[in-house]
Image (spheres, rainbow, N blue to C red):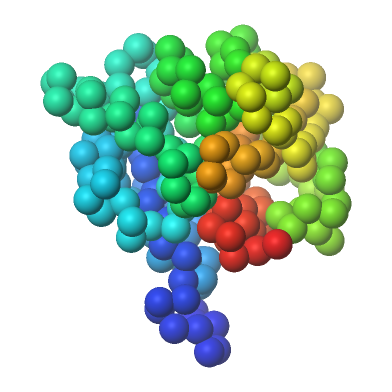
Length: 234
């Protein structure tokens, strides 16, 4: 699919970072293949980190779909471990956008910088339930990501963690809560936007598996979030 008048150089270039959690590879790729205004580059966390300062400037957005939940940053030894930690600490030093998708909210549990990126002080998982029917409500209809959208229902995995925090915890502005749910097995906030250092950040609890990847509303929110975080929307 091609948008008339769009050159390849007009597309948003997105580093899509995975590792640490199984996922439907073909289905996930299909999600981005259906975004004609996005060039995406799937890469494992450690390769992404080692490219810091060398190849990072080719991306407009860093999108995280990894889950390094077990106390280590990397599996390839101390060099990779330090590279990942340094790369996380480097986020926000440029205006490149950041998107934290689904289980990436749980990654790096001991990293205060990652907690600041997510704008959640305590990301300890207190509940996790897949196969839930969840209704997404529009909490802020005036934001560029959610403008004109209506509530919708889809099947997804839900988490119970703390809500996005107030700014005094990290010395930054509070999160703009865009999407919410009243599902009893979920945190209330599903999608929120905020400024982390120089970066626009969008965090999205949704995104577990194929049923979500193919949901038109989910695709719309994620595509808009990519463009917004890259400074191309709003």
